[in-house]
Image (tube, helix red, strand yellow):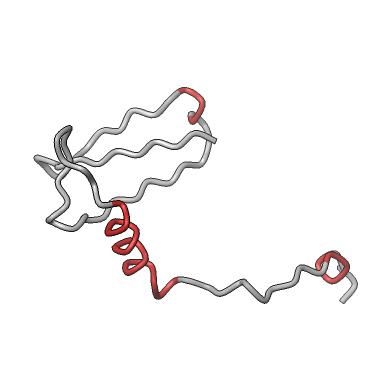
Length: 82
């Protein structure tokens, strides 16, 4: 699986993303969200990855599901008679 990650500062409301040939005809997901304004991206600035992860967790906190106690039961999953 190939991953493309781009951090940009758009100059308009349209952006063109060029995908590799391997992704043509496949389902892909594109996500765009605003990063913390203090995080600048260029060759001279180090990105605070912990802050970015914290921001992402904050955005998706209402959609998280605790699967730590989930047990997969193959027999139950394949029981088509019930």
